Amino acid sequence: MDIIGFLGKGKGALVLFGACAAVLVVLSFLLRSTKFAPRRGRILIVAALLELCGVFFFLTFGLEDIEAVGSSAKTAPRLWASLLAFFSLDQLRRVLSGDAKPDPESGDLSRVFRAIAIVALAIWGMAYVGFYVATCGMILLLLLLLGERRPLMLLSLPGGWLFFSYFVFARVLMMGLPTGALFG
Image (cartoon, helix red, strand yellow):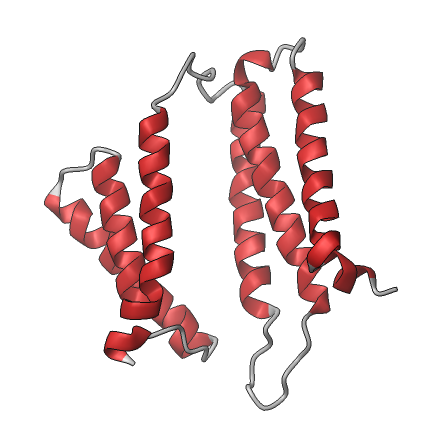
């Protein structure tokens, strides 16, 4: 049986998800009584991001190359997984060396749910306004949610992301991103 094909869909994806969740549970349990216990949440977030990178990278081996397109479907997920892994490992280094603050006692769950709603709205909106507009709007709303009020930052971060993503996807990788019903 093709293991990549199995883990990429259906029950295999559930097995993969369960294995990743089990690793996080075991890691959480192991960190409870160590010197890293005050930073356990930060370590678990980094571990989850590294698992996500590994899953994305692993699943790219199941993608087929398409000769006519000129670029592989494997390129973008591997690029993003590699960059996310690099920054996650840097964050892990900071946490383990003690540079990062200990985890807060509690958080603002309503802000978490609002952030999830903004991301869901952006994903839903891509069908109508396209990737570029939806992600710029999402970044702007998330900045506002996180308390950013400087106009230069509110314009430069979504705008910089727009130019960066257009350059990387449309010009370098020659991949068309969804333009949406309104602009397509």
